[in-house]
Length: 154
Ligand code: CA2
Image (tube, rainbow, N blue to C red; front, side, top):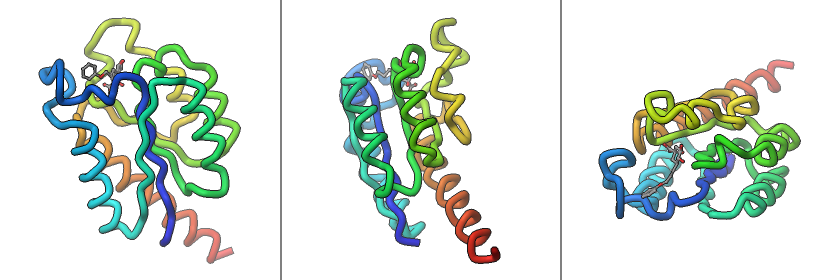
């Protein structure tokens, strides 16, 4: 399988490892990128790992994933709780997507309990810190393999 997984990170996640380690852990986003790339190569897939503080840029990257990425893993950050634009982009491109949160958003303030993005996600992983990204890579590669096998059987 020579697929690319697009891993998108939303606003403020570039600050990981510098503040609030009790909530978000001690790893930096670069550390997480490194682990994702290592694990992905074991699964025979490539990772395109990006972060933006801008909603429109995230939307543009989702559009560009059409034809280039087999799956999307997204931690939309605070846009999870506000962005119909990111939801619409994910619904439009019809690429399997998994939503990841480092923290357990359901244990936190009430405004974090709802995510607009979840409606477009095959699954949601939250509360496992950076392990969530690794679990998402595993789940998405399994989904992609199953879809390929289904195609070959038809
Ligand atoms: O738990 C998650 O992964 C979140 O998506 C993180 C977002 C938050 O708004 C969501 O409700 C849950 C915030 C990311 C901010 O990251 C920081 C990292 C270090 C210092 C400050 C913020």
